[in-house]
Length: 438
Image (cartoon, rainbow, N blue to C red; front, side, top):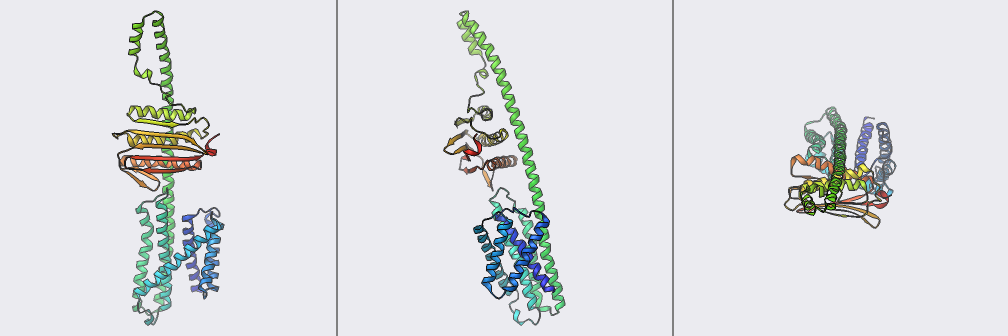
């Protein structure tokens, strides 16, 4: 009876590993509550146990049965097609067989004369099963690490060392126990050591979920920080727009007064005085705040505000713009998207010798293209979907800016391409026109 319970527990652990494996590639859409997940895991494990029990003597039918169970799990509990589910089922089964082979060879290296032992041969087989599921667990963690490395939720090396340290340490401990089997003849001692080893397996699982919970909380805190920075950025942007509007209104009012004064001089035929007056007018009055007009008030405000900032920093700005009156994105999304794109561009090329920013906002067929190209002379490092400069004090905010941009792109079902050449950085976005046009 004890062995049956133990076998079921081992299968439950394997099925938990299977669900972790599937969650790397698929998004769980049903049974998200903790109780529902436990129930589903138990049911899946019992099905797996029955397949293993009745098809134990038939290797290939047993493997096909396992693949079928995994495929059903992927279809029922995750957002997956039948074809993709079968492929993932085959991959997991292949990974399981591979770790079994490696574990067997590892145990044979530890105990080369296993057949000569008078006791503990069956127990060594059970220890080998424990080593196998731990090796499977480590392989899945490494796959998870690799897949998440190229995602937006990139985790640093220190975080992943936390995940793999305990299973590796457990394998080393169990290996030392297996190596000492020659000096152990008492079945009771072997059972105690086995139960301790099995307890370490459970500890591995508990620690994994505890660390996962910690990481999720860290991600939520990071998202909260991003929202706070985004809100601050929006507030600053709207404040700038308001200041620029007030300055423009004041400029227009003063400019009217100048026109009236010049008109009076011309009427009195005081041409020389009128010419002198014109020459003495501050250049600020002749600088038009709304140079760029796309027929979209929000887009105009953002681009013109950033254009004034570029002029102050001696950055050459080349805009290529369509009539954007039909753009129907939320105002806050337009502000966040364009302001972050242009802020990053201004920040990057501000200290360049060749200061140049190009902005495209065009209609092309059934798509809307937004592209920002800027020069830079700083080392730009890629971390997943984030690009950070080599300057430590800027790296965090720049990464948050990119994250905000990507969130908006995904909201409107767009796609993006990021290119970083030696001296130029380009961020190109393609939106389906039906998603952002009235």
